[in-house]
Amino acid sequence: MKNISEYWKAYNNLVNSIDDNDIKDALINAQRYVNGLTDGWFGFYYEFEKVIQINEIKLTKEQLDISKFLLLDLLSALNNR
Image (tube, rainbow, N blue to C red; front, side, top):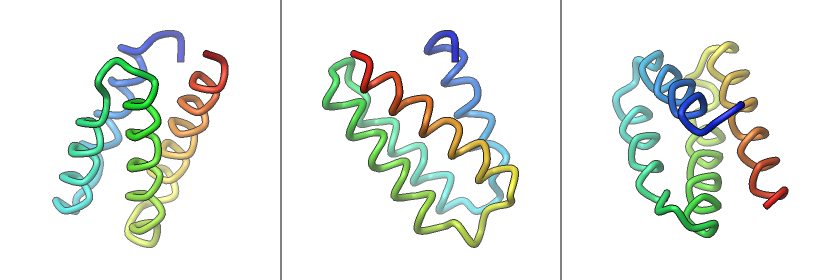
């Protein structure tokens, strides 16, 4: 992603594409880890990853692909700080 607003747009599109309200709520709650500090971003990353892993069988291939892309993009950005 070129910037954080593009990242959140893609993330929100992913959340909105999911029919299961429990998964949606878990992904929305994961965003609460983001506090502007690196540790908050890592907390978000790990929570996002956990939600996807736990619910993998409930998600479409496209949702999984988008999730993996977003997770990799975020991890890359965190590791390059």
